[in-house]
Each structure stands twice: as C-alpha cells, then as structure tokens.
Image (cartoon, one colour):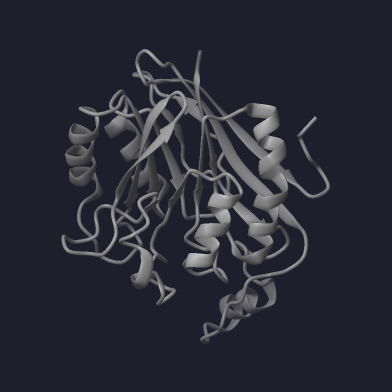
Length: 266
C-alpha cells in the first residue's frame, strides 16, 4: 500500500477554477490519490480566495487548501479564515495573525499534516520560515508521519535551501508562487520529495496568469498598470507524490503538465 498525494499548483482566477473542475474527476480515476491539496491564493480574480470558492473546491473533492502572500487580498477572508480548519495560510506570519499555518487532513489511509510557509527573499518581511518549519515539524511528527510543506517563495535558492533543510524530516516540500513549473522534481537522499515550483493552473496564454498586454506595458514603460486575469484556454500543473506508509517518506514524485489540447487522462 502507498499513500498518494495530488498537489495542484497555484489556481488562478475563473479559468484556473474551470481547469480544476474539469481535471479533478479524471485525475482521481487515473491516480486514485488519498489526499488532494491545492494552492488557492490566486483563485479569486487572481488575488486571494473567498468563502464561495473554498466551498466549491471542497465540493469538487479537494481535501485542503494552501495560501501565500495574497492571503489577505479578499477582505471577506477575515470573516471565515478562523473557521476553515482545512485552509492554511503561511505559518510564519507573526503571532496573533488570523487563521492557521498547519492543518491535519483525515483520509482513509491516515492523517496528513499540511504546512504552509512563505519565503522572505524578494517578498514582504515575515518571520523566519526555517525556524518556524523546525518548530512545526517537531510538533506534527508526534501525531503523524505524513507531512506536506507548501513553501510559497520567490527565490529558487531559498526553496532549495528549505528542501535540503527538511530532507528526511517531512514527506514532501513543494514550491509555489512563481507559476512556472520547474523540471527538478526528485526524492532527496533522506527521503523527502521535492520540486522547486509545481507551476500554475490557469490561463495558458497570459503572463503568469495575467493578461499579457498590461504586463508587457509595465515592463516597457515602468508606469503603474492594473493587472487583470487573462481569459481563454487553460493549462494545468500538479504533482503526484507517493509515500511509504511505514516511514512517511517519499518513494516518488511525478510532474503533471497539460492543457486543454493535450490531456493525459488516458
């Protein structure tokens, strides 16, 4: 028996939600994951998440939702984040911040701890993710051996550092935030599955999910520009991670990459 996790990269706007709804039933049939986790910090118009989208994700079969630096972009999140036990924001926000950075997800094969951390390089100031990781891992390993860390960070080097820092201590470290899937998935020497960035699920022909004309204008002029989520065809990025039930460590990690015109369900 194996413990299988399907983790879906940053879901961007309505196009990303459409892609998730389209793909999840057939990915469940193909891979039969025990746990489905998604990053939802861009799910509402490209910035943040709202209560109706959280409910929608759960209705589609998602077990847990991670966030990131756009956690607070929808004002209504303050009305529900403390009540949502399967929604996690970066754990290294200062003490007293609403919400939680750790959740336990019950499945038929056991219990998975999902941890959300945010990097500090090229992102707003926040508490040290490495110290917070040590604190949380010591806590959760007393309860479950299955631990997934979503490290929401900008710098490749910081993500790699976290992977090596937690090698052998958690089941997987998956990077999010940059919206470009990296080709470096591997199981590290001590048994932790790692990928620098899972990628994004959303508009294929925009720039990181945003309408490309406005992004190009920003680069060309350096003037303030309002970014909006692109429309059109979607692409879908995720990883499938298999864990050894005896140790909680990874046996394999596989990238999933497809779009509306190139599906892999067969």
